[in-house]
Length: 100
Image (tube, rainbow, N blue to C red):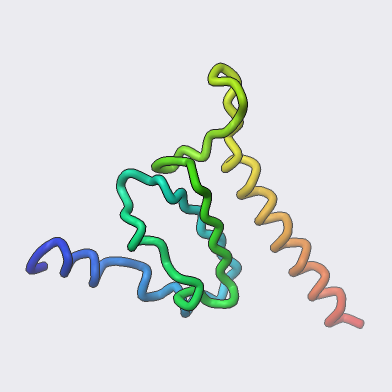
């Protein structure tokens, strides 16, 4: 690689987002200290199989909520299973419809 820009341009998965065919969930926090706002893909860059959820807060892989610091709510631990359940349910409904 010639420099950091060359590295991120050639190594980023961003260039493949439009080609994703498997249901995919991208979770990103706008206040991630390691990513600039330019790292957030635009809707036009995503395939129809890709869902992008952008939270205002969450930091870098944090996604911690809740009212009290001693009782954190790790919503990522809930959101991923919800997404997978919805994908599996849709797949099951699709297969059942195809069998009719």
